[in-house]
Image (cartoon, rainbow, N blue to C red):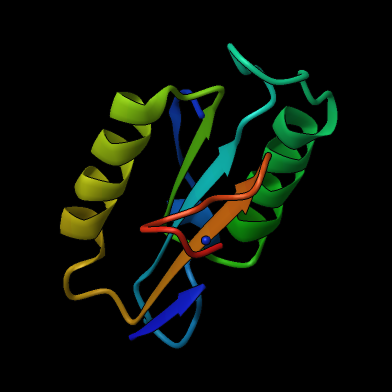
Length: 104
């Protein structure tokens, strides 16, 4: 399985790949922040990337925007379950950078 990284789930099953591979994607675009300047592009980027994944034959594309920390973590946990058994699981993120345990 390969791994690449807000809103409704789009089902692109009509564009399922001919090779039978199960492809799933999570797309997150965070532009609204409580303590830093808002970003206008990430929600637009997320919409464009969700369409790209759907057109590329991804069976399930979850597109989410402006998630808080708890919702962000929930989206990742939910996607982890969805991605089990997938041939390709992609995560795309657009927004301010992420730091985890002091590392960007």
